[in-house]
Length: 495
Image 1: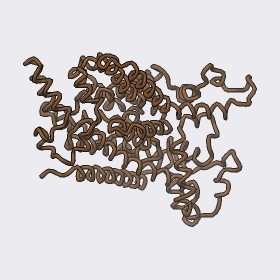
Image 2 (image 1 turned 60 degrees about the vertical axis):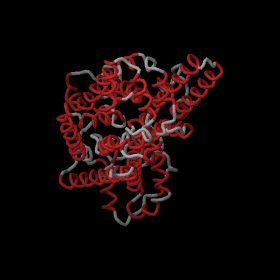
Image 3 (image 1 turned 180 degrees about the vertical axis):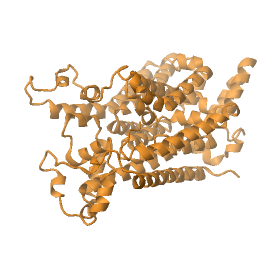
Image 4 (image 1 turned 120 degrees about the horizontal axis):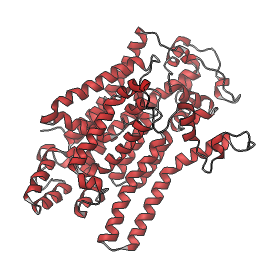
């Protein structure tokens, strides 16, 4: 008998926990063997505000060496997150870091972890809080990744393979450190899962919260936009119901606006703090814009982010560092384009309404039904998922050449189904942004929360014609985990 659904989900949970313990062990090992390149991590200037909690926490601590050891792991962007949690948004460049992680760090350090302040110090407690939040969020993100994979792939074993790969992804060091990747993955993956499972109100809330973790959380509104387009197409073309179409359009717009609210609110918060009440000649340049958006200005002014600005010969090592994840992204998009060319280039409208309903519009009950069937007997009439039955009925009416092609897709490519279309569009936009606009070396962690990458990688691992790529993918993940745990905590450049 194959393992039950609960057993698969339990295995994903154990894999997520094991991967976090592995990363922490590697970090401790490398830190004990090597001296960090930059030893300034423990420096902690006083906050500009005298009312900051740090000013009242400057006391002798019981275990200063332990506190110093924890603080020494506040490196790279972790410095900003901890500083914001401790002192608030003091400087213009700190507004590039969204408030969800600093807020949770501040709250947990003043509540659950408050008794540890006299033991290791306030800043060390902030750091410890950040590590706990990131690692706990990642474990839950892995579970939601499996649940989302079950809905989209409709295959327990395929979902398990992809989920374990996610647990040991090449950007793992950032999901263990004081970075926003874990929280973003939790709320974006969890939000999309709730949307496809029918809990749309919960989904909108989760996707909005993902926008408080990272700026690209706004892009998650694209899933709702796509679903709204399909519902509009159904209501206008097939059902001929204008009132239903208007209702669908209104709900879709409201959901998308709600997801945009966190980003807009944070920009308004920055505008109020940096521009409000200042003389026109003294305010920052972005304050004078018709739409004063500080995020784009900060990225361009302090980090040199912009279209093709990173295309210099001296940046070639960084392009090489990002080449595996970008190559995998490109191969996925090209493979999907060959499989569903009409669907991809018609923005999803070329496929028949019947298939669209089966893939997108109907409530995905397969995950809920999964407890009643095993992965080995999915083809039986009484347990077969509805979308497969509908597609096979369509295949029976199709031409012989089409039937052969569709049968092959049904039998071999659950990773390339029509359900993945909005994920492909989302990944393509993010991949293009990472390559042409951003510092390309961050592409590894920027794209690491994209589910189709793991679905496609898992597909390559079991495909007879490309099984060797499976070994390369695992080698890639292992190498980046080892390099990341070695270089990143010791303050050496890594993605």
